[in-house]
Length: 541
Image 1 (cartoon, one colour):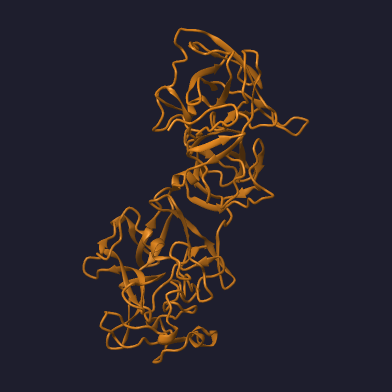
Image 2 (cartoon, rainbow, N blue to C red):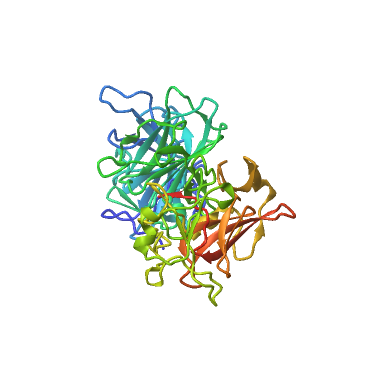
């Protein structure tokens, strides 16, 4: 539907892109016709099309027009229509705060009627040749010590006459990142995500922008640094990256920094006192990519940086670098019964596993004094389950995530260290990138099966970037229908925090099974008894 455009309320759908699906061909600015020249300046209090050198004595950067800049002038014809005229920066205007803009095909433009201008012109959306809003792209281009041309939308108030000064102001601000890193590492892209929309359709009214999109792609902005093969980092001095964001952006901001070496995840500490402000640059503290950004610390030992993987839907999950319960004697972690905070060792490695044939209360089973007791499950049942280690009255599907699959809540029974939690089933099955994991087992791609320290396992790869996470196929403690626990080194099962659907004693796992005949590794999403002992790989909260 065509947007209303009038003096009192300008409902403009705005996005920083050169085009979108709704776009029609913009007016041909080079055609012969009526020539009109307008003067335009950038308000020093507003965001600019480019940063001009060093800050001045007033602690502000100069605000400058850039070569190739173009503005769209919209003139109201009636309450529902607006004609669009594209004005381009005149020769000699680049690098100046005030300059002239020309339109060589301004037939129909009447400067004696009200009009207003917006930047960039490439974001204009037309319908039937008339103004129908704006579109901001989710991609911006890297420019050294500045931001990409067209990334910073601006607007003017209403004007009449060719001498009316078009003074541009903006509703966006700038997030300035300062990155250090290894000298041989190059940044290829930076993705900013938020709980709120950062791109997509929006309403611009009285100088503020309200983005409307609700899809995941509307909640991110990518700074593309690949044009010259990436931006080289320096271990001694910070390299600057500028990203245009809507004013007020502070809700759940996070960074995914992709380089030619790895991908890094970092939450942005932005709040009401430290947020993106229209016309201002918010400089973040220096971030050194050679340091741990997501340290995994268990029992006071830093075991390495968490590894972020981008999933097929574009979301980011940061995985622990090792299995939960890792120590010098248990390099592949401990084995956990579902819903318990404390894990067990491996019987074939000399560990003493104290099997207890009872179903305790939750208070007893969760007590640290009983951490070395492995409670046997109750009898085999007709639903195919092998029972639960808990007394029936205390069995709960909420022990590890509060019963919330979409927004899991870490509980006191979660075995992961502070800041980490057991993954949900939805998160666990994203590990097999590009393959839909189902109840049918599927062979893992050969390039994702490999030995590490003599142990075979599965390399889960990131959908974007070069990161990968190793999941060893090592050992389990299975509980069978005869009440016997058996171990094995050809299968590994990784618990999710999600309770199963079959019955109250089952929970979801991702099984990795290594064939002793073919050497192939298969993955399968399935349900197993909560009394079994399986591995846990934590994810960052």
